[in-house]
Image (cartoon, rainbow, N blue to C red; front, side, top):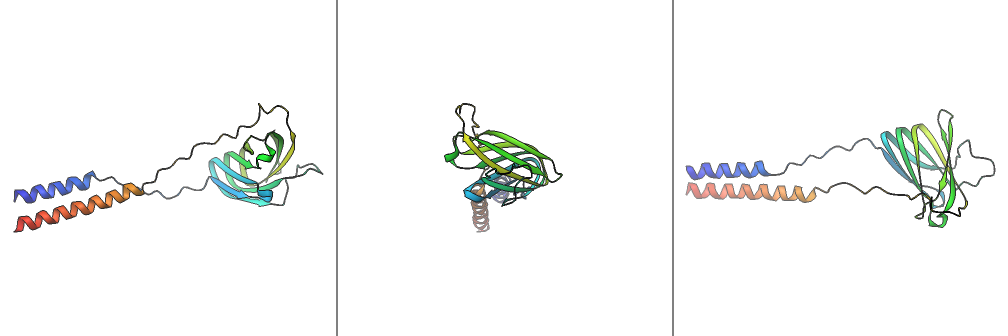
Length: 189
């Protein structure tokens, strides 16, 4: 009888010592990606709110001056604030001046300028994306002083793969069950 109680206590202790996994439902998307004309890609990340979609478009922002060559335009829909946009225009434009023309749904416009980073990226920040915003990118001449160029710094990727922990949990649970059954058979003999 004592062996049975010890076996049950050991099995219970093993089960309580197993890690518990909590698979969270995905949060509403606060980012989006699209590839546009000329291979230009856009990555949009919102500090808060939701980015519904990011898509390449032939429509240009309303504040683009006539005769301006636009490399790519993107439509971003959603309701988000503190939005960071990264456009990869290619390393052939590294050190060139850029202008991003922005048109929001309410008719307001912005013009953001800077220098393309050495890795060919343009990183800009807008306060909000409300309903639909159009971002049109124009590339200018090479800037003589690239020391002040946009560095295009990237945040490290985060995330943990819990597949190994889940597998170890299942194996340990099966082993605990096998020990329990073996001890139970031995006790009854």
